[in-house]
Image (tube, rainbow, N blue to C red):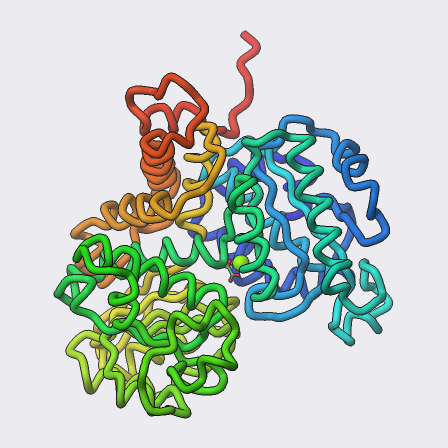
Length: 480
Ligand SMILES: O=C([O-])CC(=O)C(=O)O
Ligand SMILES: [Mg+2]
């Protein structure tokens, strides 16, 4: 597929769009993870733009070397937290390349308007540092001022070169940098963090859709997360925000329906002083609880969400415990790739005796259990970011706002059909993804106009039709 992408791009997209369910797992999660791990040894032609510490002071010049001038979407990583695989240094390039392939195939952004970037500040991965085929800087990661100066130069150069309407999607940065970059540039640039915001939006959509199967309103449920990083706290915050809007209750109150477990156990008030700032809003008053299993027993969640990047953590005991509390527990095993999934679809159905409503970040085949076939959905930000980005691009948005994330969730949840629900699915199939993306784009663009953040004026009448008309299709021109 890489070979095809580089030699006949149009055919690559035609193949990908026409066979999206079959090829998504190859171009994207989980195979893209393996490609990143082996990137140095499968490296034949360069893809994307590498910017390293050595280019400090010359980043604008480097950007100008890229052959395409009118860029609409940049996906950038520094490779420090590639999926749940950890620090892969500049071999993380597979991720921006893969994400942007989806921007085109799923969201219809022109391939020439997409720019994959990897910022090489070194790696702390000893195995890569000692690998003769490693393609990046052989040094430990730059941190602190050296790191933030390079990123600041990059963000400044991007705006200078492409203007205010270029979307910068941060991808697979480590927690501390991810939160900091989003907060720092959210007010001056059009930035979106896929792991915090995209994941939050797709999971909120799945939870809202799942209410049709498990009953109740959002505020009737109790959420327990394993993992309190970008995905965990991002999802928790967006669920709390939606609950707060629905019930007209302050968000400080709705957050109390949501509990998070990290590597040190349940996040509780007595731990507050030693918690990183993004975990602090979740430190509710409770006695210390050491393990996920204990937390399930005392918190009694109706929804269990795995977002720690560590596999096999939803054990038989954990799934049995959450099943003993709920008729239909909602279980989301979000960590990627498949090796890092909290449990498999088969385990979720077997251990819950077919009662769990299950979705996962990486895809699983349908499972047969006691003569019945169970289908699980893919709770992956791939449902959101292509349409979300398209909505920003077509409206000429200059900032991202949380209400746009809620609009995207709502649009996605609405597209789950009765036929999907009957199969136990809480997401529509990827085979309809271009239609889904057009709908998400229209909702996001609509919100941008409503908030006064859109610059493409006047507002098109029918935003779904307009979004569709803007989408790239891999067709050949007619010469007769
Ligand atoms: O790439 C994916 O499949 C989803 C994602 O953003 C991640 O796991 O970091
Ligand atoms: Mg990611």
